[in-house]
Image (cartoon, rainbow, N blue to C red; front, side, top):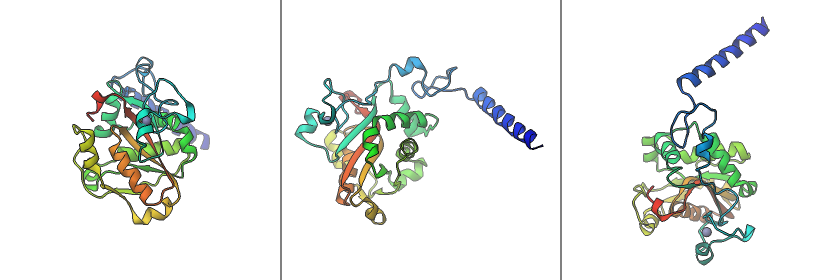
Length: 256
Ligand SMILES: [Zn+2]
């Protein structure tokens, strides 16, 4: 009887799985096309993604032609260090990866999260080993209420599952609603988010002296990440790193 029940439960599960595959076959997170294989990205599209894992500037993750290892800093970061300490990005934000971000951010598409956060965990492997808390970039509560989710929380939780880090979901809050950064210049973006974030007083004790890794979906000009990093450091974080899914690497892509 027990064995029969077990068998029945198992075949029911298999049955459900194949119905799901039939009704909703795997859809690429890059192109949105349905493909016959398993996984979030078919092989021919995977080859078109620009991965930034394991290379680039140690602070802003911009790709660099020569990799100097631990001391790898781009000219911009050497001249003007960021508000954070180290930065890692999984992929370049470009024409190929745009759809991944838009589907995640605006449509709340979650089926590629395990793949995306696996890339992020690989890109951030070294900094994640030193991290006490993963902290997602927050949305203003009004935008959160309207959208119903914060994709940066999803990414932080997904990375945490793979790297065994802890997430402090509500460490930061947006103290004012800021207009979307899309279409703004770098200076306007900085002014737009200046002082827009603060650490929740109830979380300050946990952040004091801690190594924090901020998690966000896209690094465009870095103004949001910078404002968050400053708030964390003011609250006593010893070290702040950033880990993003995608990083804009060409000026032409600063549209998001
Ligand atoms: Zn740099």
